[in-house]
Image 1 (cartoon, helix red, strand yellow):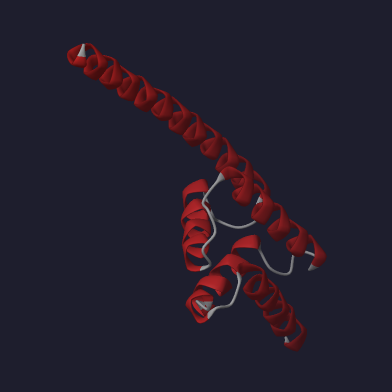
Image 2: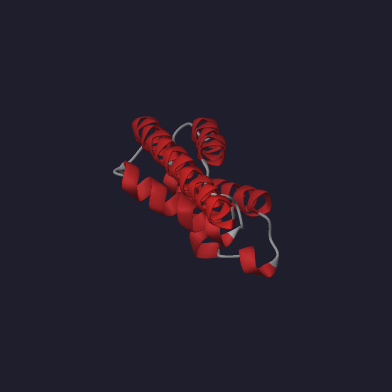
Amino acid sequence: MKFRNLLIGSMVIVLASCGTEQKDSMDVGSSIETFEMLESVFDGPYNQYAIKDGMDEVFAMYNLDAKQSNYLKIGNALVDFKKESNGSFREMDIINHMIEANTGEGGVSFDEQFNKSVRTLKRELAEK
């Protein structure tokens, strides 16, 4: 009887881990599509891998989960600010400024630094 319970328990664990792998591979596929989409709407010489690397670095600095909904939300915000600037700066200019600022460890939130970076880029453009 104990052997049977052990066998059933082992099978449940194996099946549960298989289900997790399928979900992860689906997330990877969705992420690939997400970055292909971001590459098509972002200006500049940035491919999907450079975009993902930059966003992942910012997400790590500001303690955001690297998940599809966050990539899309931030990507949309970046595109909106680029449009607001009439194309004076690119989406990745904001990401790169946030990476250079690196204020996440100092307690600055993603939203705070995002807004600071946009204001700084706008100010720099106005001074030119």
